[in-house]
Length: 290
Image (tube, rainbow, N blue to C red; front, side, top):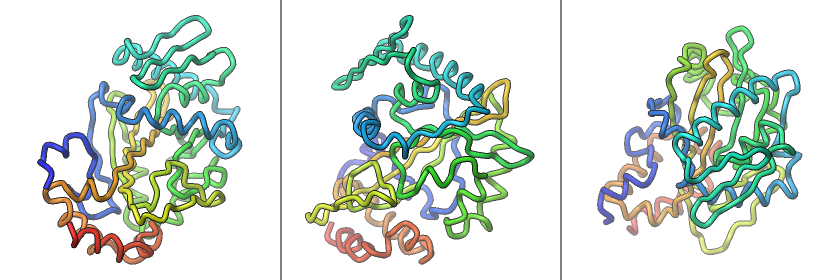
């Protein structure tokens, strides 16, 4: 078994809570808001998708551009403060230097949402309140976990999450209450996970992913963060996707037992929603043989 110190470099949410349908919020310090370096491979995914799928991954609402502009200033300050060696902001250009990835962005030719998305590996969703509901008004989603952004834009979170079994009963009230009460001075994170038969980041229902025949599985973990503007109730919701080979995860002490417990207590409706019902037998076989 791999030493437990390995956990410090991986997000394994089923260790702390086997229930996949829960808030699981943790406060994070500002310097830990985004995971620029550990997710840097996502930049290559974004560049590839922009060439052919920009109509599926970028949506902006002209009525709510001010929130995007303000969040860009927040992001620029964050990167200049905590990643000053990796990001150089010039008059019309922004240079990025991240180990094996570098890029120069012409800031004069991009919208604020496009700029933000080009600067960080995480996906970005801008939520704007109406009454007590939050509405998805702008988004740049390059790593969807088998959902279609086009059908979600300009919808409330309750409507967006209608396909999720148990969301309305278990999470809807908690999520809306949390977002409405979120202080602008604090940042929170939560995790969502599933197991996929591919390490591809772009899982979209209209573009099936070709699955390799090696029977290799990957633990797909979404790290989600919430940050509210100081002078507005708008929220930037980010999603960073980590892919870990399942066999590598199962080498960690306690991981096979924790994962088995999580699958065991998972409602059948959630398994079907996540597609785990199709590969559950294979997962259990891999756990047993480790």
